[in-house]
Length: 343
Ligand SMILES: Cc1ncc(COP(=O)(O)O)c(C=O)c1O
Image (cartoon, rainbow, N blue to C red; front, side, top):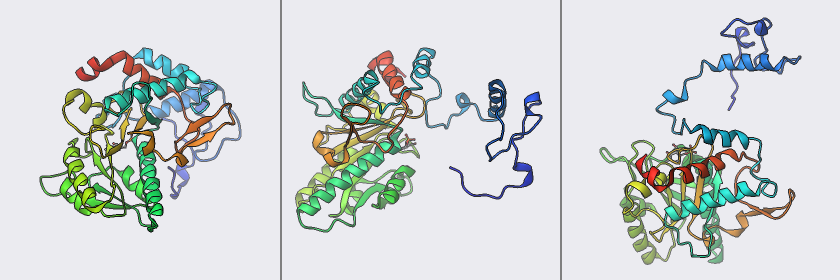
């Protein structure tokens, strides 16, 4: 994002680190140059400037995957010019995304019948996935409240104060009050008891984190589910749970399969996971999976047909690249359960 700052004279042009005939006349920094330059000049200038960036392979705090096999990089480059949304033109890419959604849904124990396919979508990352899941909860809650003849203008969401910034974004962008359970010394995740105490009739969902951004710790989703079931039974509310498994979604199914945090728990209605974290893909892919079709309100799904046949979409952006989806599929079939467990 660019924000307004004062530009001093010395910052008006691009400063080149290396001497070259290409940079004898410096390029304006913030205005499009009047004249074109040869392609090798453009390459050299940008490549030289980028040498001052850090090296991703040495960045241990990148939050994302920084190395993939050359075979996968070949697939990425071969599909870099495919717009994912053009599903008619690229039906195989769409099929690969659907396979990924189903593989992840099975990994998370979604109740998918023998001849059914799972409900979910590939996103740019967990943040977009969380926006979509949050919108589905907000819409479901509004529909229920309207049907009961009750006001639906003050939705809230209960989370721990340790949530990642994307939850604050969701709350602010989509006008939902964020009710955060405070952390205590020595206990740096959401306490399910306190979270359930904070739930009221306007709560669209409680969001639990599997893999807190601060410490990596898993929150106790099973206890949260039990306490919330009791509260729902007492009050007649129907407050659901979302699990933000951005990091833990590709850890827990392999390392702690006995841990119940996913769709085995009845109140868990949606789960997000970042493909670019432990899904082992370069930055730009996340996933959101819904428990069943009924958990995703129909009126949030757009059916567009101007690129061909009917295309259902539920994403924030229309166009996006296909490479990351293909790369995710590569990792699933290349590594299988066996290697995801080992890595
Ligand atoms: C728990 C949690 N949720 C959401 C996110 C946002 O994920 P993304 O970068 O995939 O949008 C992160 C990122 O670190 C995270 O740790």
